[in-house]
Structures are given as C-alpha cells and as structure tokens.
Amino acid sequence: MKTTNIFIFVLLLVWINVQAEPADQPLNNSPAHLELRDQFGAIQKLDFPKTNITFLVIADWKGSREVAGWIAPIKHSFDTRIDIRGLADVSCVPGPLHGLVERRFRAAESYPVMMDWTGKAARSFAYVPGMANVLVLNCQGRILFRAGGAVADKPLQEIYEVLTQALSLKPPHTSSK
Image (cartoon, rainbow, N blue to C red):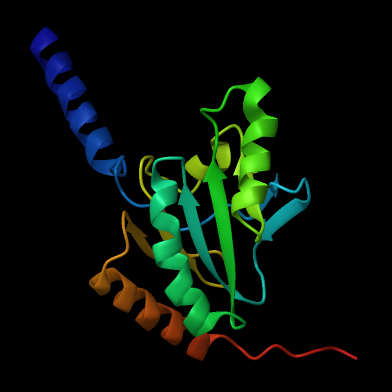
C-alpha cells in the first residue's frame, strides 16, 4: 500500500510540474495601469488600452549607460508616431538620497523618466537588472518585442520591423464629435 501511495504522489508531482508554466517564460502583457512620479515630481501614467504603440526602456543605474543608444535612433525614426517612455529602477537608493537622485535626473534628462522607488513596476515587466531593458508594447499593452543590454544592429533592426508592422496594423485614431 505504501508503494502505491508513493507512486501516486510522484505521478501527482510530475503532473503538477508539467502543468506549471516555466518560471523563466517571458511576460507577454504589461500591467494595465502604471502610475509613478517622474524626476520633476509630475505623475506619469501608462494605461492600457491606449491609442499609441509604446517604446519602453527600463534601467537601473548600471543599465542607464545603455539607454541613450536605444532611444536616440528610435526617437529619430518614430518620434511623433509612438509613445517613448523611460522607467528608472531606483529601488536600491536609500530614502534619504531620493532627493539627490531626482536632482541628478533633472540635470541629466529633460524628458520625464518614471521613478520606480520600490522596484515593483520594473519587476512587473519581468525586468532584468544591470542592463537596459527595451520593450515594444502594442496599444493593448501586449509585449511585441523585448531586448536587453547595449544597443546592437540586429535587435535594433528587429525593433524597427516590429514598430513598422505594429504601426501599419494600428487603427487610425478617430475623433468623436
């Protein structure tokens, strides 16, 4: 009888393991609502669904050196047709230094960067610390593309293709009167 119980228990564990999604499977959807303050103290919202495709770059201090390499070419090619966003994982900064970090961001960046003091928002995108995380999200918040690290020709070309295709599929914005 004990052997039968052990066998059933092992079968149950194998079945549960097969049914579970792998832990390292990439996230497919962004959070439906994200609200954080930027370095200027203004509330920045990222809500889905929305009217524009979103190009989102997430980085911590170490990954921040890689951000400009991704944003500059995308901004140059798609600036007014997509929503370009930055999210800084500053969760490792102690509370008393928040003001200093915000001042440094204000001095370095003129565009708003969402400041994630808890790291919760960055983690909700399956963020990988230590490098720039680049995501393309469609109007419903589905992650269409993900890359990380320093900018490179192949992933940059893939982003151009994904953005071009997503923009061609996006329904034209109609205003209601």
